[in-house]
Amino acid sequence: MMLVDYTNAALERNGETEEEFWDKRPVLGHVRDFARARMCGPWSTLGVVLARAVASVPPDVRLPATVGGPMSLNLFFALVGPSGAGKGASESAACDAVEFVDYLGRPIEVPVLPLGSGEGISRTFRPAGTADDAGNHIDRALFSVPEIDTLSSLLGRQGSTLEGELRKLYSGEALGFTNAQKATRSVVPAHSYRAALTVGVQPLRAEALFAGADGGTTQRFVWLDVRDPDAPDITPAAPAPLEVRAPAWKPCALEIPEVARHTIRRNRIAQLRGEDVDPLNGHALLCRLKVAAALMILEGRSVVNEQDWALAGEVMVFSNQTRTATQQALNERITQAHRARGIAVVARDEAEGETRRGKAREAVSKLLRGKHGPELSASEIRRKVNMMHRNFLEDAFEDLTDSGAIVGIEVPGGTRYKLTEPC
Image (tube, rainbow, N blue to C red; front, side, top):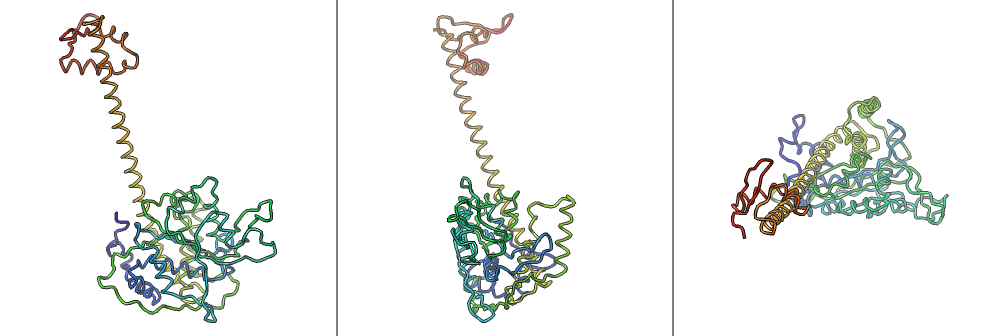
């Protein structure tokens, strides 16, 4: 099943096409070309590159307090495609396409870790029993979930705290739980860690992510397709890896363009006034701002500019298309399953009804061939047959009459039925 109609006509927005997006910056063109050289989807490869970009930045670099308090750069990506479409290949290509180094040119090492329980997330940064005055064991991580089934299983466990912890992880809030036993206590202070998350999502198995829409889980992901319908017939040679040198980061709230601040505030006013706002877009502008910051990082800068914001808007257009198409494919699968289940129920009920109708015919025939027959009124038959057959007697009379086994004789007060060939 096609997830999105990736034709130029479908992707045109304001007169622009998909290819024009990649040509707006050399680094974007590099990611596209490297992805195609490795036979991966450009969008999913870009998603992993942006996740790695965010993970390379110290946790005390944050977004400014436009709504509420300062917000973390932590960012989540859903890489969408059928099984075997290339989520793992996109991750490998992204790692080779771009290398992040600090301002002295030293490689920035970020551990890539699997996702476990909600408690496991906090213990990634701060193992249980860490002294209260000690720092985090590590301060950054890139979590990778190759298959959505793994995440679905983790979210579905009885008493699972994972979904709530993921929402906190996205916002950079305090993680963990204050247990009575110090040896098992693991509380990670807010904004003391950096994290990014990538999840491989098969469209027809994405129910777990959409089930969390009311809590905001769905909206916290940027949704990108792993396929490349415009892949060239001849695979091009891979360009040399690109080195991105980070600025000398200091604890700060990043500068963002006024257009971003104005748009976010205007949307927030609409929410406060109770105006009609799509719940699945509740975090769309925050996601966009985080993507803009990731695009900034990808260029080795420390100020988010208007082009970062505009390009992030284009990324979110594709994210919304992919998310919507994923939801439509999932809804269609669920509808088909319900329809099939309904047909099966009807078929079962019909089979059961026919069985009981047949037993009613047998009961009538047996009664008329017995000592009370060969002729009885409908009311007499109703009184004498087993109660379980009574709801199907009218059908039995009709069937036996149509087949010629009995005849109905209209008499005052009702109908009498008589065997056509009495024993």
